[in-house]
Length: 421
Image (cartoon, rainbow, N blue to C red; front, side):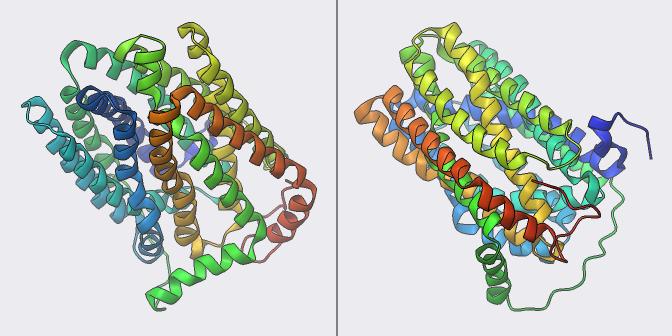
């Protein structure tokens, strides 16, 4: 294996290097599309409720279909499944690019494309979680998850900034086109991999197989608690990103460039959070990190909602992104370390439901509330909810640690050395 610094040790694995390098290019395009699409919806409608509706259409299929996607990820090669999902995503993005560049795009086109991409993501996200775990040895899984999150958020810095400039200069369509082309990088990386699938065939009926994942979560209390916390944070906190065009234009008076800067600084904070996890050697203390980051996320959202200064708002995006990423990536790490390989796709599909599936419900509620209460108060209320659930989790932490240690010592989820949470 190639020698890498300890913080980059997962890059010793060839398949992981190919995957993460293709991901970086593709995700820059994805973030460009996210920002450009939000601005396009806002430009076409001028309504916060429509921003919430489009976000709902893009993510709600994950909530509905993620369990099916997780079952598929456990039964077929995730590598092959990712090639299919990435190819379909590239085609759908190209359609939106053509419609926008030719001046024919309408709101229903955006909603339909978002809905179809959401269906694809219901299969793509669980497959991605399983695949990352298969590209590295188990002791390096925590580092691989952190580096994967770092890539996601590195792209989140570059993509929005470039999108803000491009939208202001030439319009949204070019961002969609660049995103479509960027999928070539990750597909090429996947096709270049050498991968042996040693998974045993699973013959149980589909309904019973799906139930196995839920039964494990209900039995494994620490996993259940992490998923519930993540779902509540997504429901109450994540709508802030949907309302960002409102903040950029109506509150901070900066237009699409301001939107790109705000999203970019949020990504910068999230990248810092992911890198802080990459430097860790074990899971010691992650339970405390999760509780404190959940409370910090809520407090940062409240502070952001109160700001009317563009420079201050930009700076506040750093702790928003940092705390959100620490909570999400730490939860991902602990859950991945506590589940058996045979159930990984199904359990991580529920993780997808909580993270991306609850967010669209929050976006729909947030868009509606923003129409009546205004974006700042809506974000402040969500931040207060995040602060409350983070405090509750922290107060329950001693008992949660004990249950987690028992689960770590179980035969299927054991590591070579038992980590202390």
